[in-house]
Length: 68
Image 1 (cartoon, rainbow, N blue to C red):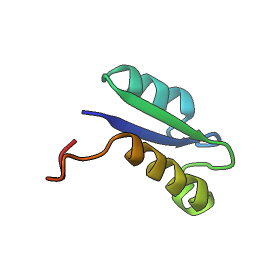
Image 2 (cartoon, one colour):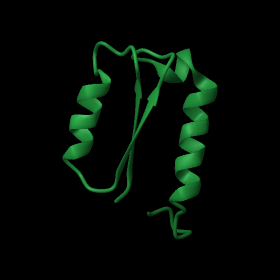
Image 3 (tube, helix red, strand yellow):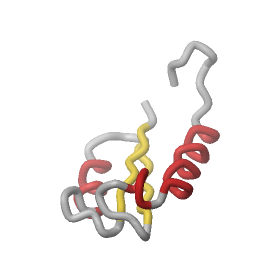
Image 4 (tube, rainbow, N blue to C red):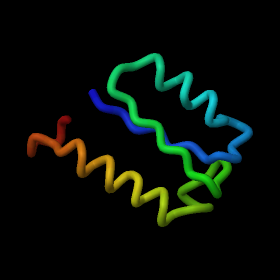
């Protein structure tokens, strides 16, 4: 199952290095690092956050039943 991890460059709670380690544990993982964000990129950088989600979803369309 494809997975998306979004992480802020300045996140000190779950830093980018930790996000990359998490990604190594599963196949088919995309990590997107948001340059101007900390732990709350959906608040700190909402345009980039939602654009990353939209782009990822465009690359991973559903089968029409909601599963990937």
